[in-house]
Image (cartoon, rainbow, N blue to C red; front, side):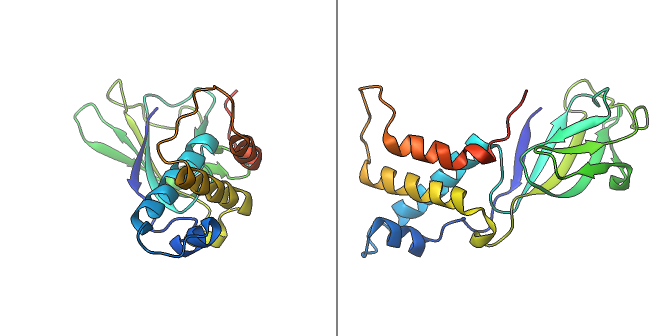
Length: 191
């Protein structure tokens, strides 16, 4: 059940200026490094929470329709169901009207509900169903919940100050506990 990023976010949830202010850097020599740390911190938070922070486009592939008629959609939060298609045995794509799906956006992950037996069976055994979605909180940094932005700030600061340092002790640094506490309410867990 892979998810493929089609369009990455156009901006980061933390601007370069905000990050530099937080880590108290007044020169421009490390701008590229700090920008890379911001992107890395966003990706880390997204991976830990199974959420898209800024608006992004994704393609989700599935082998078969679930028998329950309920299809969970990650990453969260789902902004829009863009399209659904099934690969036929002859190698062509058959589009399915997105109106055939009821969308439960209140759930995390969001659920696409459909009438069992109403969807055409995929004509190939693997990745026969393609679902294109738009996910994320929005296009502006302030659309992202502040605890997730703070987790990114802390990661950027820690990584900037500890470049190349590897903890051999096996202890969990205090910043890690703080970051985990900030993102814990936003984690999407599978049962």
